[in-house]
Image (cartoon, rainbow, N blue to C red; front, side):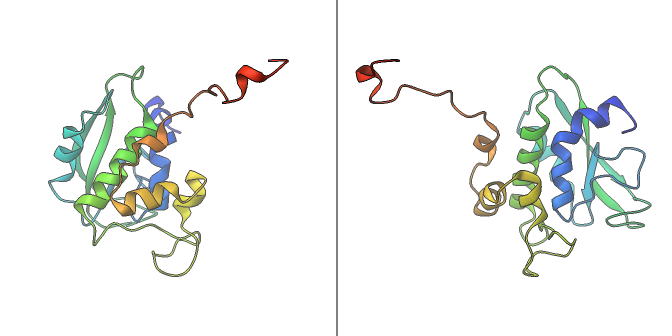
Length: 167
């Protein structure tokens, strides 16, 4: 990783490796920028409306020199970290994925393990990155995927706690 900013965003933006978006490989800012040929002027303002903590989304255009969409003009966003103390990289990326599916339902797609497009019968790479299919299914269904980013609830009281002899 070339910069501290790349290291800060990577835990979240690595999820874009499981999509048909460029995650900025082939640029000087890998994982700090994401984009695709189908993204338009709606994306950055839609992300800004989410008011995610510690990050500002800069609209940008770029041409990656290698990897996904090499040599093609892309539009997308740069994640500019404004406060590392409150920035949540995974929550931010998950919100971005949900926004992409909502804005570009006919263009946004999940990649398969072998790098192919959605619908080829192979497992989706995002499921491997996330550890299950729950994120993909929530995004595809239009459900709010952000609760998937919450830590598990601490163990609560078990209904039989009051009758245990050695609690």
